[in-house]
Image (cartoon, rainbow, N blue to C red):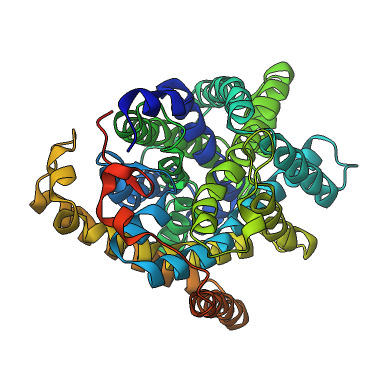
Length: 458
């Protein structure tokens, strides 16, 4: 059993570090790249679509905020699923989880686009590959190195985005706040919904903070606090960015274009250079920096339970699981090498991600019955009525995200994605039959042992 002192020694991340990781993970390629595509879908109302996307994103992550206030989760979603739904579903989830890193290719691709907008002679694909490889290397140095870099980059990121918004507010076109003006809701309700769904993928990634339960000093207090604070921060930042991006210049100039074009027009050259380095490029860097470590947590826990060959359990001297990080790197690398466009990567990554997340929601739904004491002790003081209402909204939002993402994909992409998920499910069932999976049922039922869910007060 973990004693409280041992528990505190194990953690290295305080609230400030968690907040910087949370902000950096969510403010990334979506805000700097997908905003142009969203303007193409809904015109000047892109800022309203972004506000709606943040609120929808909060509904999607609310179950993970609640459960993080009840437990320290050493393996993120995998921890919840293994503890509540049992061995088979834990394996199906963790085998499929690796495909969620497709979203990282979106971030790296965005780096190439923005670097080329600064220096047109650059090869965008080469820049994407270099960026992906660099941050893969940083994460191999362990969570402390990643966290130190994240803190510095996050401060610069917020300052750069604030500069763009403050200057842009003084250059908004007439009729910006009148939704009856020409340019609002260009493609009707369908276009607005498409824009929201495209933007939602950039509003939910801070839920991965739950996977840092084993690294946080006060996880049950600080992790949900950081996630809630981040949602409020991005509501202000994203809505402001969308407002300026869609209303400082004519729609014909900014639709389906990166944020660079607007920034170039409204910012003096020194501020433009600062914005480009600290804003779009900074946002991409903070997301890439936090991705590998967060994504490796559930996989490492799964490896300890036998879902993967034993060599995947090995970590380097910095505590980084090299084998899994290489796998995550390869998954993100493939769409870049195949030169997928931003829209295809966004919808494909969203479709797979939200399909897999349905398993997590199903597990969280059973927590009040499985762990009534921890549910009642949550400092968020959640009633069962509120809990189940939030879960119903999250399920509905998740299903909507799957539907709209699929609607924007070709049948070939959908079929390939489903085949990938099916193959991972088959691999999980095969691994179970080998007898190599060893999840300790006693640990699942007695959360005081801390292997899967740790109920020690924080």
